Amino acid sequence: MTAAKESRYADSAVGNVTGSNSVNVFLGLGLPWVIAVIYSEQNNTVYEVPAEGLAISVIMFLCCSLVGISLLVIRRFCCKGELGGPTGSRVCSAIFMVSLWLVYVSVSSAYMYGAFDNM
Image (cartoon, rainbow, N blue to C red; front, side, top):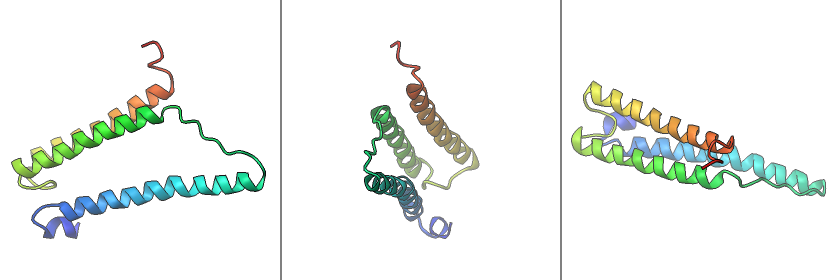
């Protein structure tokens, strides 16, 4: 919060949040995976993770990320900052970002449950 308030733009705050989330994801997913592989190797079994759904998840994440970053760039020029500005634009941006997350989760989940099999 201090980084967001004290800088002209919210670059350090956005970078801090992004970096923190990246570490959480990499450790939160990577560490259990490494532990599972080590455990399976010690028990002479093969640890396999099916890659089904990974492609659509990565594509959806990339698209939603690009749209979200575009919103931050637009806000920098229109509102003179990523996190500040008038209350209306902050609320609309927050709703838009949550909507992007919901689209990502919904499409990825629907794909995994076979909603697109008939297409």
